[in-house]
Image (tube, rainbow, N blue to C red; front, side, top):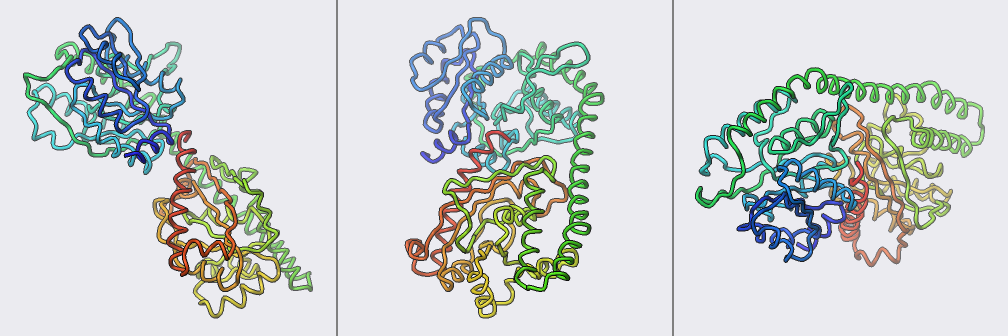
Length: 506
């Protein structure tokens, strides 16, 4: 539980609880929430019972209170603005009536880690098995249907108040023609409105299952006004259907077009540089240079320069590279460089640091008809050659001042998680008696996923950690398998640190 509390804070996540006259349940809900989360904002929406006095007696919360009841939408908006003022990036909302279990907060956290920047909807499970009013059942089905019509996406529970909102992506105000359409609407319909506008603005919406508690009908506290609130929801859906055609649909078309253009531009940029810059230049080097070492070095400098042009001069629109090098690594001393593996973009992220770098590759890369001959002349070797064949070649490279880059995972991670490390990299480092230099890569698999066809806007960060000498490696284990196991744990921790920091702003 301590890890959950710290991770929530590290990712900039707080909890916002709007309340109106919930004196019978508010203390229990808030205290259970505080047992899981450091940062809780409670919004007293003009409470007229003892709720406010109870809240003033609970330490460790941020209280937002005002005298006149303005509705749940207004309470959410004020809570969100307070969260942004306090520097939070995400807010989990849950109801004060005890319907939601604060103990399910880790489920929303897990969904946020898997889908950073998404709006997470806590889908209440087994709703068909609890006793609900006919109005409640109708409202949820009605809302689900119109949400699908307005956005093209279907959710099974659009009425749940248990959600995780990416605060910096919420459209709090939208200018249409010459009038201002205030977002958020003041009452219950605000939650549907938030979903619709978030979807229109390209925010990914993800459902995750959560529990739900409905007390006996006589114990429930509800401020839902059937006739008036149904009328407001009907009017809202009418307006949203019109806006879906004139606003939401054009936005979706434009967003899809820009994604396709971004992908096509990057692919064309890559092909043009390979065919008309790298290949002719490499061929010229190999033809004119008589010294074999100079030929190879020339190819290395070409690859290094090309990767720096793409990374630093933004050859991939929407993808910004950044590097962290707190220990001042200059790559003058050869090492075995290890890095986690996510995407086709990983190689470029590695090669920007130094021209004196050789990467162990898969066979399909080594035999690639487009750039395979360049890879081969740069002495990039396929791992399939086996340790007995590779070690003498790698020793020669180390003796000539080259570092060797290896992906211990062996293959790209499908979801950017750190998968099992193989022992090969550590075996090679041990046999060659050289340092291991860890690099931790973030974002490449988000920008271009393993099975993805399109490039997405996402930051790429690579952090160069401190070298580990052969003697220091023994502290990670006496066997190469133990070293691989311990380094994987190290990478999981470091990757989480980088992700927690960056994903507050995606």
